[in-house]
Image (cartoon, rainbow, N blue to C red; front, side, top):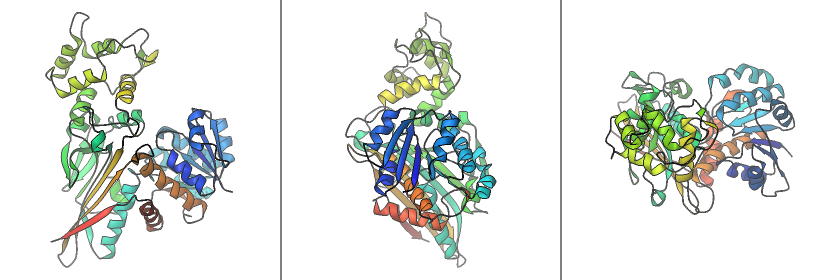
Length: 439
């Protein structure tokens, strides 16, 4: 029986664990909170749960030594450490996160050790890559070339669960959502490189209309240009990868960042309230109205959407901050996690939208659109957990059954990986629908 180590028992792990147990693997789940891992193992005879501080490298190394493959679902900054121990012990690895520079640096060592490190095999990144490459390779095989590619993805509340002023609920780690708002971005538009510094990220927004779904705010997601080489799209004129949110999100997050609420510097929070923190960020005196002072600091009306949402969250309240030392980002994240949580029985949804423009030697042009609209299961698995962890689980099975034998730091952008994964996902009712217009 092959042994799989799963690191992390967060919001998206459960479908992966159940898939692997059902396939007959022995699964050890290691999490900071053992009770979360135990709940996911649910007494299965082939499962084991234990507590782990992932920063304890001696224990981590021993666990990796005892497995055949490690799945890293811990925060992204720990993936290179996990990879290092996997390479030393000649164990394979799977993660749903982006390939960082620190991870890419281990490519040569992984190849030398004969180790497969499969990254970016979730939904975004993951299903977006695989569904895109299936179309890109199809166009190439017909003699055409892609001249423009726009790709969008968002995890959102289903329409009936969209009942708070942010238009958002957390289906994955709240801290990760807010940290993503600190990223710079880069994309190519009509042959022109566009650099977006982090403080302008939420101002570089446009509206995307998805037929049958409605209008969404779209803003750039990290470095789109790097995917020209990943996808083999040299010479393309437009490539844009974006994140989708409901209307109003970008104005709020832009102003929150401008105020300093996405800051990571911790401060002494002993005895302090949320109102105290906001007063400090706004530069307001004790005698000033902290709400009015915050609006003035931002140069927006007191009645504006961002200010009203801060009030709704409780950011101006007399509630004590939740730790002795805390950052503005984490203090806001604590309130968001409470107030933007899914209630029992509510559904989330994934919206994935690709828009390609292709040209062919005979002068024919095509617009190819691919959409994935997936909903969570009421009182069951969320769409986010299924679309993130099931591709990874299928990747684990493919590696351990010898269907993926390439070594080094990989992404799922080759047909021998993306076709089997997409085909099995379709059997699990996670499927992209394509349509083509010819002109």
